[in-house]
Image (cartoon, rainbow, N blue to C red; front, side):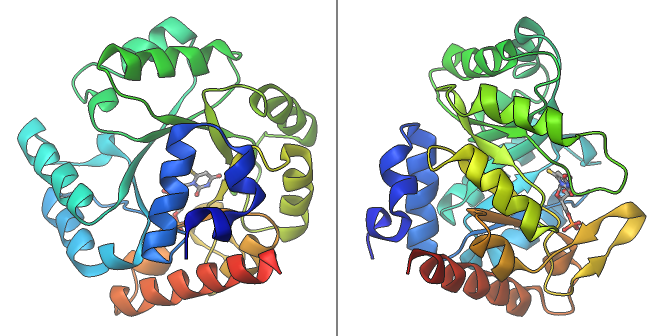
Length: 266
Ligand code: S5P
């Protein structure tokens, strides 16, 4: 099935090239799953691609938590991810002013050269999006910024008024790929989708086939419900990488997300 048929208005309303790229990858892989690859060695990260890469559309990394990081090993990992048809999403949660964020896309990790997507808080104002996009432009690449509109963790300070302001600024900004919403609360997610409209994507962490409370204040909701409520990608971490059989679990998340997307379109 072609991406435009599967994604409907999300496809026609979204003009950012990286958003279209994601929708194409997800359609090819029949999966709306982004694995939160929270692993601290290169060997474990590479193993995840081997074990579950076939069931994912994207890999979410935290490059600064890898103990044995080297530029060569990271390059090889990115090449492996591309061969498995995976987008790379560096969850850096940038928050500084535009000019500094642009420089932070370079530096030792040189995120601009390998990340397709990055996260940012809008706390410093909208110039952060221009700064990050300038970072990609500096190396002749383009990417997408996901703004944190909500968070899944207990006691977070992203209150409804703040969420509305992030959505208001982000929904018309051409460099914004979409928003991070909270996958653990479908009702709140529905409201977020209403405010965002069809022009931007919503990706949701806080999703697990076993709903309830996770470690250290994390909360979980059901993947199928999250997609029905308006999520375009479920970000799953421990639900896959801590499972006894990660491949079986990854496939279950892929199927739940893909069937929910079809159900949503009916
Ligand atoms: O609100 C948020 C935003 C993010 S990006 N809550 C989150 O948990 N995340 C990320 O999603 C977090 O950094 C982690 O990598 C992942 C969730 O992992 P899990 O093991 O709880 O599924």
